[in-house]
Image (tube, rainbow over all chains, first blue to last red; front, side, top):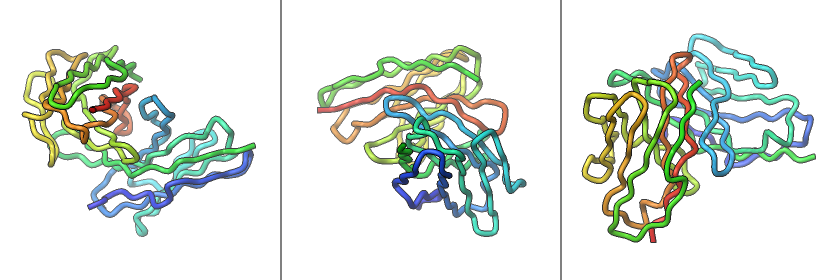
Length: 114
Length: 114
């Protein structure tokens, strides 16, 4: 049972344009959503998060939008840069057993080309 | 943020043997997590390690296969026991940080079992 889904395995965007990465979830009890970026041979790097009580969070070129009624969130990167080329993971957090448990989507590979 | 290191960074092992992966954090943390990323897959939580108590394992993972130690607030080990080729994965440790449910990840250990 995939609670967090990233239905696009890959995305190709031209440098300077907007990249939009999408994520859907099924569990309405998730209280935080996070985006991570992963380069080959490195661990995931935290990018940005959003609380379930908000619908938007912005940090520089990165904005995350949350639509709770649709159980959908998206990460917007604008303008996209070649250094943004990586695998992006969406994760959802729920408090269970005394700790915050993260459940990850399968990831979307973003390629930003000149 | 926390700086996390893992040893070894990669290894090639024979089936039937065991490998112990070390995770070192530069700050004292309460919760440490161990994840597995199988080829082309997402990150899956194996277990949560809280200092001074036994690790909590997720469904599908058992202590006999993945024993974990957490001797202090900055260190943990994960052992992959009696390995088979299906255990070939990237193994990552992470720590929970206070703000916004973030977890910070180590660089990972790439394990290949022949």
